[in-house]
Length: 202
Image (cartoon, rainbow, N blue to C red):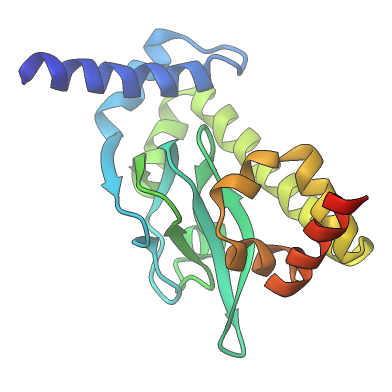
């Protein structure tokens, strides 16, 4: 059992290290500085790591599984993002402001995550230029993702939205429930079913 536990934790560390190595100036020493602040958590399908109205205290790195980020509009759930393996997830609005989160983050699959408290992340920023770089790059990537989603919804037809997902993120079509995919594309499940039938017969 001890050996299995060690192997599992080594795998998690390796996964996170592989992600970090894509960025300039990564060193084992930089990881060692952060390691004491990083903890692991298993999340069951359907559970939240953050509920709307709660306070976001952590940044999460997804080892396995997929999460949806959503908010409620007139009581109707609107999904704005799907976060998969090797991505960070958080509510920046709540994390930075200390205010209740306008977003919820819920597991669509059983998942495994690493998490770090925002206070500890700020400690890392003060200790290591590498982690300052990671914080900046991750925030920039999140901005780009949000901008691309806005363009998808505002500038594309329902069919074009679906085709863009089919071309760029086909795995989502296998892993995400139809109702969540429809919420993300801001169409009805019936519209997606119709588009799929059209594509199958074309």
